[in-house]
Length: 130
Image 1 (cartoon, rainbow, N blue to C red):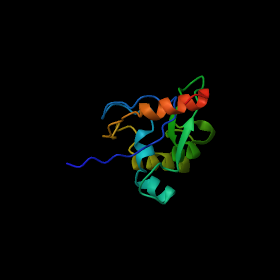
Image 2 (image 1 turned 90 degrees about the vertical axis):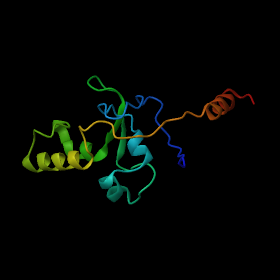
Image 3 (image 1 turned 135 degrees about the vertical axis):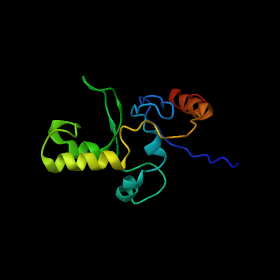
Image 4 (image 1 turned 180 degrees about the vertical axis):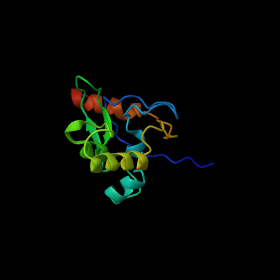
């Protein structure tokens, strides 16, 4: 079996990838590796990070995490609750939730490997040593 390696750049504050099937925690690994079907339409590509992926800083009510920009844009001032707001917004959010498989748990069967050599090289450049 051949092994495909791909480099993805994950925000340093992103939560660790959950186990496959566990609830999504916004780690972003799946969307950074490749767009979902609707992300392919938005991004106009099949590989690489989805253009709809958005990094959200921590707030009083939510931790820092990656989120789907399609969900955020449609949510509006009422927040991401698809059960409130105008009918068109509820329909849109329910449709987007279905397309991105929101609520079905982590479906990224990817194994993450850190690159310690690259991190060490970056640290030495930052500190002015070689």
